[in-house]
Amino acid sequence: MSGMMSRLQNIIFAVLFLAVMGLFAWLSERYQYEFDLTWGNRNSLTEASARLIEQLDEPVVVTAFIRDDNRAIRDPIEKVVGRYRRHKSDIELEYLNPDQVPQLVREHGITVDGELLVQYGGRQETTTDISEKSITHLLTRLSSETSRYVAFIEGHGERNLLGQANHDLGTWGDQLSNKGFQIQPLNLAKTQGVVDNIRTLVIASPRTSYLPGEIHLIERYLDKGGNLLLMIDPDTSQSLAPVLAELDIQQLPGIVVDAATQLLGITNPTFALAVDYPRHAITRGLHSQTIFPQASGLILAEESGWNATPFIQTLPRSWTETDILREQQNISFDPETEERPGPIIIGYALERPVESADNQEADGQTQRIVVMGDSDFLSNSYLGNGQNLELGISIMQWLSHNDSQIDIGTVRAPDVRLNINQAGALALLLVFAIALPLVLLGTGAVVWLKRRRQ
Image (cartoon, rainbow, N blue to C red; front, side):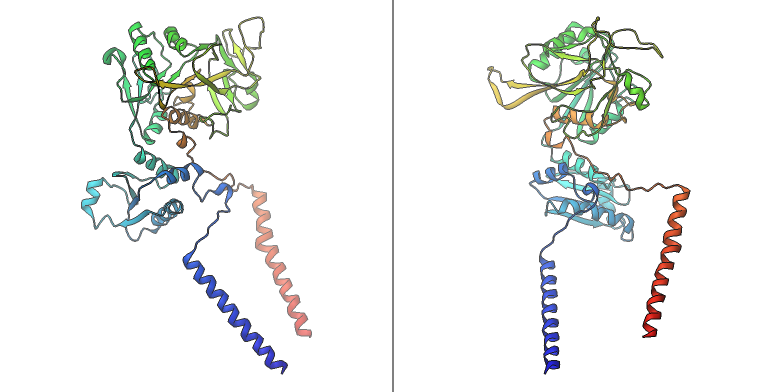
């Protein structure tokens, strides 16, 4: 009787087990749940990319031009696009063999095996960079309702957003172009004004004076509600004083110095650091230091018509040095002079409502201005230091009213590479290649002998 009950229990257990497994199989076909256990969720979309995807209200079609046998490229494409499809179900991914569709290859200018053609809202663009950052920036450009034209004034020794010299801003300009900004030079002496389609005007530290008429054109642009990025250095031409006065900003005399940077391996005391950032949309994505060579301090007028927020400031140990700096010169703060102790503000974000022609505030529109006491931080020489590039991109996104796209980035794990010396490598070899197998063999031999004796 007991044997029959035991067999019945076994049968019931087997039936229930198979039923549960079948239920799990049925649920897995209809529902999916994924979670990312990697550091920083680097196999998932960043928060900024997810926000962008949620704002897309039309289907996205991704066409990969790839040969059938190229799994080395096909797998990364499926992995990256899959991250987006978790947030937006109407993203279609299709593969075309370029050898079989030569007309489409010529039509879209496909040149590389694995190149992607992304289509959204009647617009399309190709990319060979299979990464989240590249695809997110591409979708940003495709979903932008208006072109973001940026003009930089030239003709007075300003830094060139298209130039490749060390002091120019060409690398930063390239990054802006990748994010959908249309960059063009502007010579006020030739154009006699700023055209209406310019979303942001950039003045990057002129070395020679503007003519009074050119200053008038800039002031007229500001009076019409235009956005502006104004970067000045200690040796910037003083002809911009009227523009600064209209912005209620004053430039402090001297150069911001931080003698303690020598402890960080920076021998030049005129390299100021910013580590802690006042709360603002521009600095939302900054989590590391930014470096500013030869910066000017800025102060806001006591009475200002702007909603002004300081968003970049140096460390408390810094100050404004007014003496001429020489190599290996010992410097210190002198309270008996015009020098000011830190922290020194070197970046202001200004905002005010845009008024219509009848002097009434336009519905929800604001004018945005950024004044920086340094232009070197975006130059080709220093753009790669700290988060200078991220700061420069964030400034332009904020000026273009693209606040949701300011902190788009890709999380990288800090532990993806293991560096060990020769002794460590030998220890790992002894433990895992010799000691551990011997322990397992010895344990197995002991168990075998005990069982044999029984």
